[in-house]
Image 1 (spheres, helix red, strand yellow):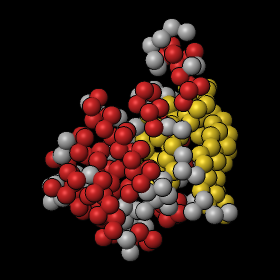
Image 2 (cartoon, rainbow, N blue to C red):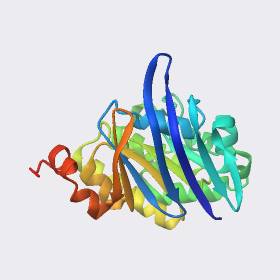
Image 3 (cartoon, rainbow, N blue to C red):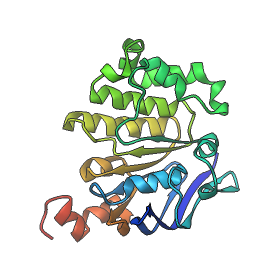
Length: 244
């Protein structure tokens, strides 16, 4: 399935607070794109615009799938998920009083995924073997790293083609951050996913990204492939701790 996400001149916010100012980016089939920036610069807001959770004031979010173009700004979140778009939200947002397996089953809500529940459960348990051992455990009693595994697996249960991952490193130790980012790369390759990842940990994000955009105060200030971003003076100063 050919897929492409094109975000063009998005302006969005919350009431009088403007979070995004003319943001444009593009993700092509099978690529991993990193949206890089520190907290409070609009990364999560852009993800929510793609998912229909925040309606932009202007601009477009177009998802091309097999030659058909869908304007996501005019669609509900449920309809967007039904197209094959799934998000791992910042902070996991699990159902803490439900078990691991119950959380996973809720991820298979969309109609197209219901016939693949057994297969997707097998995929999820294969990707994260710990979840098999903990499948009867309440999600709220798990560690932060375990919850992040569950949140990613839950997103896979919907059989997505486009996966959005919002701040996967939040609240995790450096070792778990590295493991989580590596796992996202493995899953992307194994299941032929297209990935948009919002992340503030530059060094970890560029390990798996094909292309990156840097967002500051709601505006894209730089973009490029991994090597060009590493050599960018602003990146050296603010993300790599190297004087330009």
